Structures are given as structure tokens and as C-alpha cells.
Image (tube, rainbow, N blue to C red):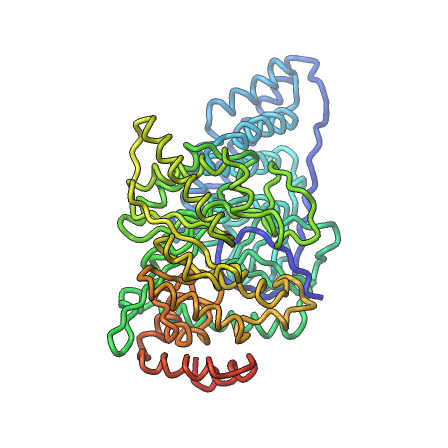
Length: 572
């Protein structure tokens, strides 16, 4: 059936397994009013016993697991701090003493109120702590009312776990052998569950909004944490494709020893290998895989993690944090790319028959100057902390590009008027992901400092096939000779006009395409961090001469089947 659900990948990797759907039961208030002082004293004692029991649980976990990771230790310490938090304890005891509530109801209401406070905070990290508070509530409720918590028992091997959310205390017990992937509706990249998933090597996807009945227990599921994609009941061809991807990931893990070796071909041509990320929390994985910088920071993930538009200050801190972690390494920031498959709940967009061809990305930003200028000012302010570059998505005309560049100048003037510093010489580039832009690469190259080729959209727009539509999956083909000609023209024009050109689409991480693209003149590849070692292995074991020969031969071929067969024979 190949039912595809998109979300936000917060822990990379591919998993194939059977679904287990956790259905959360909401604990209801009992509504009992305490009538005597003796009852109040008893409920206060019940609460203290629940706190003591919860602390005992945490100490038992520590004692039974002497080799806890730093991430797990931090989570347990956070929970201890919350249990001893005087504000929370004071709120619960006041609800019991003054409000005459049972400990059960007092904990429920106090936790709900504190969760609401944290969820409304501007800082993403602090918002993510609401899950820890809910988790403490669950611990206390297990003590006060045994049997109220949802069961995590009887989890079989290779389970893809679906849930509204996963409590950090449950995630502590997960292993990659049992839980092959986590899929939730709630959560974010900075949640403790996401952090634990990354540390344990478990693929995880959050923000997956699904209709009731779309997935059931024991359904076969593919979860791609690198792409933020869930495929329910996949067909045999899709399973085979993802099994190959899993095998590549395993090979890439073995190649991590190459991380400190530069990507230089046998005949001395240096190639830059960058990574695509959604936030600073992924940088550790990038470094571990030998990434030399960031070729794509997807800023829409910052917007998707909020209930309203993030302020200039919030965005500035996000970009600054990423820049500081990278030091002088490249950081290419793509401006807001929403619409299509990425919708903001607080920005209603008109219903469209084909949103991928509609109102999205730069088209929205040019109309919503208030949003665009705010983002540009935040990026410019952060530019003094690292090697930042601005990149515009979905540019189809010189008019759009010049409008966007004018917005950058306006943002600079506003910052100067406020005596705020920025890098006046910040580089400006654009995505080449619309065929018109690829055809006019010579004209665009005179206007920008760099190109980055987005092969996912460029391919689907060139062959007129929605890449998410299983009925036209065979038509969506990056090795279509028409697509390859657009790629070659873009790369050649960039090199001719002496501007940088990179690729951040899925094709950049495809080992079969590496030497073909290198032979076209591409010198900068940006991909998911886990793909970097495998691509580096190909580059350092081949020469430019071979790459040019492959490209010359491929560009003479008239169909993708012949091209793919040839590339496979060449051992890509």
C-alpha cells in the first residue's frame, strides 16, 4: 500500500519492523473534596510517600545500571530535581491543604498547570522540558494509583513504536535490539526522548499526525529518521530499496575511521563534504562522521517547533548557537521553506490542488515581509559569530531573486539604525530546484555567490511526478537524461562564472551518483551525516580522470535504465 506519513526526523537511520501502537489513557480527576483535617493530613502523607517512592525508583535505576550514558544520567538528575522542586511541592500541598483535594487530583492539576507554563515558553529547550514534567507526573501517579500508567510490557524484537509521546523514563529502558524506531505525534529535537534515541542509535520521527486506523499493531512499517518519513505497509520494491539503504548505513558505520581524512581523489582533487541538519543538536553526529560544515540548515524546523512565529531574538539565539559550535566552518542557512508538505498550524494557507506547485517558500516570504525581515535580521546578527551564508529556496525568476536580495539590504539598514552588528559581506546564494532556474543558471550566476542544487524538487518538477505519489514512483527518476542535463548545465555555469556550487538533495548521498557528479564538476556535496563516510570512501579511492570518463559516457546515453546499469557496472 505504501502509505507515507511525514514528520521531523530527530534521530537518523532506517528501521523496518512491526508496528506497536501505544494508546494513552487519560487519568481523570476524581473530584473528591476532603471534609476533615485528618483526611488532609492523610493525603499530604500519601503525596510525600509518592515522592519518596519515585525517588527510590530512580535510585534503583541508577544502582542497577552502572554504565548509564551521560544523557541518561542527566535525565535522571533532572527528574530528581523536579521531584524536589519547592514550587511544585508547594503547589501540590497547597491544593491538598487549602483546596481540600486528594493527592491524586492535586498532582494531576499541579502537573498540568506546570506543563502548560513550560509549553508556552519561547525557548525550544525549555518547552521540551514539559515532557519531563509530565513524566514526573506519571511516576507520582504510579505511586498514588497503581495500574493507571500505560503498559510498555511485551515489546517484541524489531518493534516500531507509535505513540502520542514517549516518556523519557520509558525511553531509558529502550534498546536498539527491541525498539527499532520511535514514531510520535509530540516531541522535538531537544526532547530528552529524542536525545536518548540518538545516543542509543534508534531512529526517531516526531510530529507525525495520523488519522485513526492508519496504522495498527503488527503492520509492517519502514521508519526513516534521516528523512522524517514513515511508510506503512510498504510493497516489496520499497522494502528492497530500504533494505539496501540500511545496508549502506551499516557499511558507512564501519567507514567512520575515515572521518579525519580529507576527501581527496587519487589525483589530488579536494572535495568538500558537508551535512544537512535541522538544528545545532545534530552537530555532534556531523563531526563524528567527518562532516566539514553545514551545507543546509533547514530553518523551517525551528518554526515547526513553535505554536507561533519565533521572535527575532529566538531565531538569533538558534543561529548563533549553531554558528558558535561550528566555529569557522561553513554554515549555509536556508530561509523559511514552508508550504507543500510542511505546514505551520499558526499560518493558515489556502487549500490548493497541488501545493508543491503553489504558494510556498520564497513566494510566501516575499509576500510576508514582516516574517522575512525578522528572519533575515536574526541571521545577519548571528553572522558575526561564524561563517554564515544566506540561501533562498524555490527561486524561479530574476525578479524573485532581486526582491529577496533587496529584503536583505533592508534588514541590514534596520540593524544599522539600531546599532546592531552584522557581517556586511555575508554571501548570498540560492537553491537550484526549479527547472527554469537550472536553464537560466548563467543569468543567476551573475547575481549570487553560490548555488546549491536541490535534486529532490528539481527532479519532480522536471519529470512532472510527485515524489510522494506511489503511482508515479517509477517516473520520479533522478537519472532521467533530462534531469542530468539540467544538473550539468547548472554546475558548468557556476564554474564558468567562478561561484561555488554544491548539492544538498538526496542525490548527493547516492553512491551511484558520486563520480558522475564529480565528473560534471561538482566539488561540494551536502547530505545526511551518516552518508558522509561512504561517499568519502568512493572519492578517495577514485580519480578525476575516471569521473570525467564516466560522465562523458553517461551524457551520451538516452535512457535512465542504460545509465543506471552502466553506473552499477562501474562499481558505484
